[in-house]
Image 1: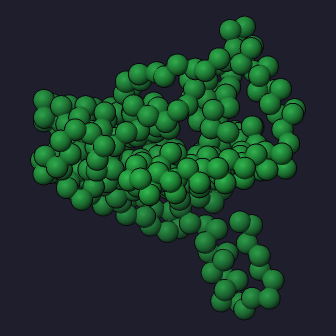
Image 2: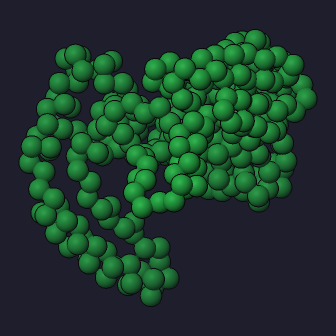
Length: 294
């Protein structure tokens, strides 16, 4: 049974180094890199921190390393555990001037153009993923998109079979050059919040079109639910019968047929159909339970 599309609203978001055959300087540089403080991608230039509460900051460094975080006149410290992870919470921040966030351990990271305001996590399927460029009256919206205190972080990581600590993405500031790639639903929502409350707004866009709700739900939250048993059984059957060679052959057959149809459509001035998707092992698919939550 095909999962019906969902209309999901925004919700609140309160190498091993190979050292063989290298000279001493390179070896020392490699050792030095192991000690560097690292932050998740979401802690980067143009970010927005939540106002009015204890904003969390976390990252990684060497075990037992002292980390200090400074912003808006306050400085907080934490020490990494045996696993190299550290976390701390800032005192409540209020909207105001543009800030600089400094994180220091054995190295120093400086995050520029930080604002304080409202943070919202915007998640869903194609209805959340559709961009402003695909919305009505894009030219007008593009011209009116100069909201430097409205920012969006687009999560760019794919599905995962286990929970991940680090994502991918960058913060973009709303403006004519960037707004076309913003989620339309999130953007129009963010504009209203920004204009009505008069504070900066940060939108975290984590959406994938054509996906099922069980993919966005943690494994622990659904694994023992009787209602999910038929879904899990179908996935187990798919994984047990997965044949990579057969799937690849089927894909090539579909792609050959698609090329013929696309060439014909182009010659007739029509839109070409969507290309077939490359086969993916079922356990790695975006729709597998918990893979997008992870």
